[in-house]
Image (cartoon, rainbow, N blue to C red; front, side, top):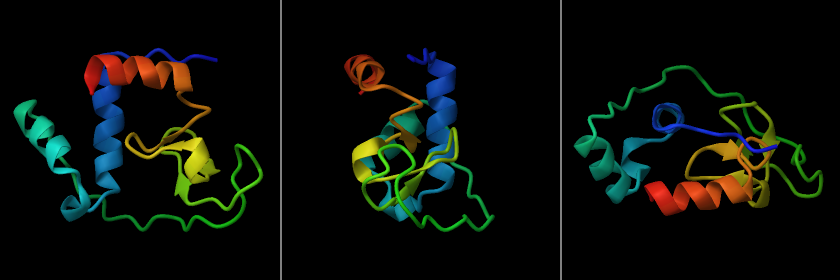
Length: 103
């Protein structure tokens, strides 16, 4: 299943991801891009649910992340850290396309 994302959806994903990332940990280049494009970063005051257990994608490795789109927990191999979403929500093919056009 391939998910098509337009510019607005990508920005929405990035905004949601940035809510969950400390500003000091943010990649400097990404911060500059967001400033240039007027993307505001909002702090989320809610406590996140802890990520514990086995990856819900591959069911092999310990999970380290939670997908901001579907909520599944995933290991590093099954997760796009830059976007904060799992590889079931955006396929490798779509990620390559996004990298070519936006990164």
